[in-house]
Length: 310
Image 1 (cartoon, rainbow, N blue to C red):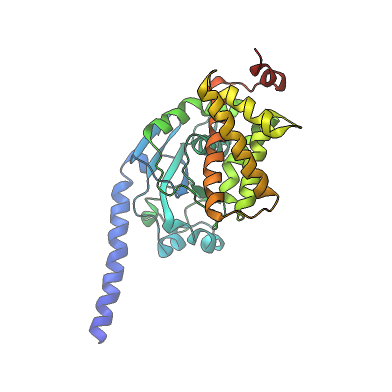
Image 2: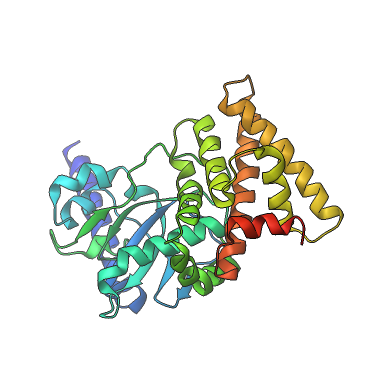
């Protein structure tokens, strides 16, 4: 019995030594040893292992740290319990390299890229933690050496689209447009729409999620009266050319707005219908924001009105 116990201890120690050795090998690759910040992603599924960005990369995490490795590596031991509930679920990391041109804006840039990913895709992911070391190499980190930050501490965040993956084309779009996105953030209507789209999945109540998404749409168009007709007409005019496709989208948005009214006013509606509505409205808001990001400007309220007649 004693020998069996000793063997179990040896096996356990060997397990950690093997993980450390593999992490040390990964450290020989630049993508795991670059200086900068590594933002851990949970719920992020992709069709690629690694995609380079202009100022960093998105890459799959190999062997995320367990509790023992995390406790040893963290510079601040008081953060262990918070980080411990997330690290096992990390799947990918966004790396932003440390550069003297923008090193004081790394966290702003990361938010621009993360938000742009949420605009372009329907993958519900959270970014709970960031560190100055790749999450694939924690097993080889010297004791108490890793600096970390909490980004999104939302363990109950919801996921509506479980089967969606981020594609290389999505990341290319983000890489080409995240500066356009950042330049539009000074517009209050645009910023409200962005906050609605990029935080809706952090709500605990699905009815509040719907209210939040629609508040983003309403903010963009700045409509105060006759919301149902004017919103549907202006959105359809923005996204579709004249003809049957514009009319069909107009009719669809009116029906979506009817569901929105039932939900926010407490009418009886099944949870399945609510989830379907969230996916559709999120997709609609994504299309609207994508249009403005690609065109590098937000239309004025008068310009929206002109869409209907000119």
